[in-house]
Length: 169
Image (cartoon, rainbow, N blue to C red; front, side):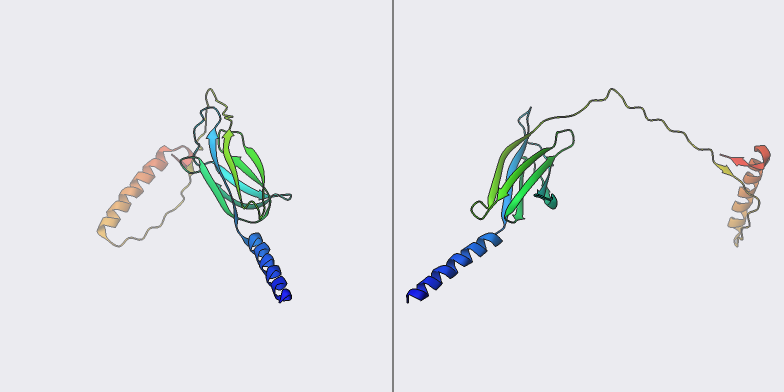
């Protein structure tokens, strides 16, 4: 009977340890602007495993700056938090059987915007040269013939007016 209880205790401890290791873990937090103390929406949070920085998953913040990344396993991670116009931040964290959820709390991002006085964009259009030696068009209706006769006359006049027989648009 004593062996039965010992076996039962050993099995229940083994099941608990195995179940705890397979239990999914998560990371939660809120991203705010350091200066304004307001939530920042659509901030990117990437989860990388340590020590090799393998990509595990990602998410973005909601309208209140909150985020949650779930389906993580026991291990060491780093959360890379980035958003356009702010300095990126890296938060290392550990997930274990005893602490399946890591709450990063409020994470403040510092503004790194660089203001430009002005931006000037210039461009050049290329010259298009069309060289036509002969066009053969077969038409069947009277309307088509009239249209293409008019087109032929327009092209001929353009050709005569252009320099060296090239049509320049």
